[in-house]
Length: 169
Image (cartoon, rainbow, N blue to C red; front, side, top):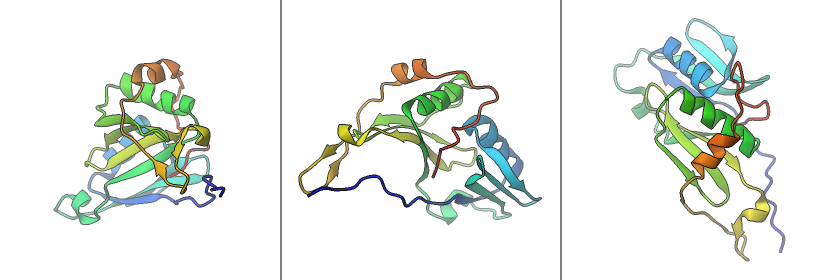
C-alpha cells in the first residue's frame, strides 16, 4: 500500500487575544520575522507575502489570555532547513530565550513563547524518505537532541529579517 504524506490541506492564521497589542506586534515582527498585513486600533494581521499567519486581537480581559483558549502552541512550518537555520540564528543573536528544541525524526523544531506566554513552534519537515514509516502507514516520531550548532552555522544574515515567503501555519 502507498501512503501520501504531502497534504494540500493547510491551516489559516492562528487568532490570539492579547493584552499588549503593540508589544505583541513588535515581538512577532522583530523576533519572529512576520510582516504587518493589515492593522486597526484593536487588531493586527501578520504574515509573509500576502499569506496571513497570526491575527492579534486586543482584549481587556483581566485573567491571563492564554488560559482562555487552551492553545498549547502554534506551529509555523518553514519551507527548508536553511530557513529554519535563518530564524534560529536571528533569534539566538537577539538573545531571546528558547524554551526547547528537538529532532522529531520527521521534523526539526525550535520552541519559544511570545511576550504573553503563547507557545510557538518553528519547524521544518525532513524529506519523507528520512521518516520512520511503518508498513501500516504509521509515522513514528522521536524526541532527540537538535543539531543546534550545525543548524545555527547554516543560518544566513537576513536584513531586515523576515520569514521565508513559503512559510505556513
